[in-house]
Image 1 (cartoon, rainbow, N blue to C red):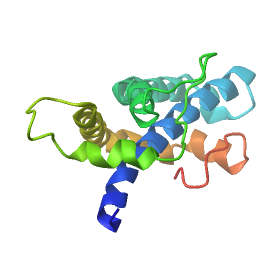
Image 2: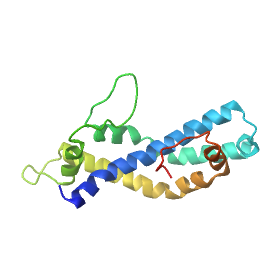
Image 3: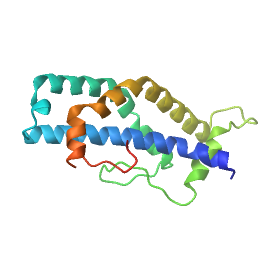
Image 4: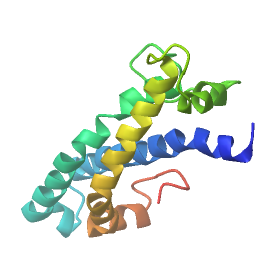
Length: 157
């Protein structure tokens, strides 16, 4: 596998991590809000409406998490409703060849499905960049990440 092939295989993983981080931010903001911690901006009705509107605009992107997870895991899932990408030996082989069409058969394969999902997620991310940036710089998120009330993966930012 060439370096360029390997780079391509990581694209959907990066997209998955972005979507997962967004989902975790909203879950944690909801949780912190429910605790009614004395943080005035989070408790204000205006902030609640603003964060709700951001969530609403980001819902189409967040909804793609399950599809992307399934494609990255090759359809493997764990019972109990847990959601995640399950990396196992050979995972890149599931992703990298997906960028090539089967020219002999001229029909969609599992390979093209992953490519289609990745392109769809990329388009949704491009449409959502401004809203993601607004969420990331919002004072409530800054407060909770600074005080370690919301913990994200090291590379989430």
